[in-house]
Length: 127
Length: 253
Image (cartoon, rainbow over all chains, first blue to last red; front, side, top):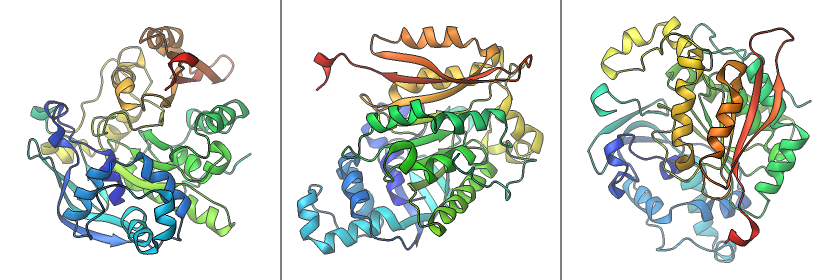
């Protein structure tokens, strides 16, 4: 699953829905793989407005990527800053989590990721 | 006619095989009326739409949207993802998307950006307010009971072919038990302004009742039948409803 997916996922446990700590989930012991994707500035420009930048920054740091700036770069800034564009390209488009765990910051539940598929099915007592 | 993604690699003992309902979804999403709606609703200078299929099965519908995004949405920069309780279906969907992508690339054509598939129960793992287009071909067949959902501890018995397939069609009372759960969560899952959903229903699901119920969620909520299918005299008369919000001009921020 692409790293970007974490920006759209939250803990599935009902009790965690009201807690802000359940997003983003925290990657643990993750094995990353990299796809080779053609540069696509338009895609990046149109993804950024819908990304929770704070959550993305947290995810990037936790996965060992270079720290992101405090705020999402504007389209104009990105057009000038090839290095940042390259970093975002790698982080958002190319990097996949192949194996590992996603941990909820509220309840501690760990969701397993195997062969790129995260398993969010819950045992009976947590539904 | 846009090419249907190949599902030759899929094991249909464990995964729902594309049928009339799947093809109705493909036809509907690529129909003139829906292309017009989606082109307008998700104009090219707006943020990339996030499209999710709940119950992606073989991946045929998701891959179709993913491969033909330029035609369906008027833009290639869409984000796609699939969800399925069946792990085999998740794996199959990933493959089907890849095959469809390669097919597009080999023709020098575009496609969307696929985030992946997750194994989960409906929208429970989704962060609220993010989904722009939700597509759902539910288990809509009326059955006396609902098959139990996976409990982690019971993986081996869950994994029997018949159980997995039953999860793909068994809808309980009026065939609506799973769909109703999704509908309950839908207002929260969808983006607050432009989120919309395409949901397939059969005659026994009582579509008119379903649409009325959705309209009762609030003044902005709309639900209309955008396509129909069904063998003449067949019991499985199908239709697809589009659910969305429409705000009066004064309310638009």
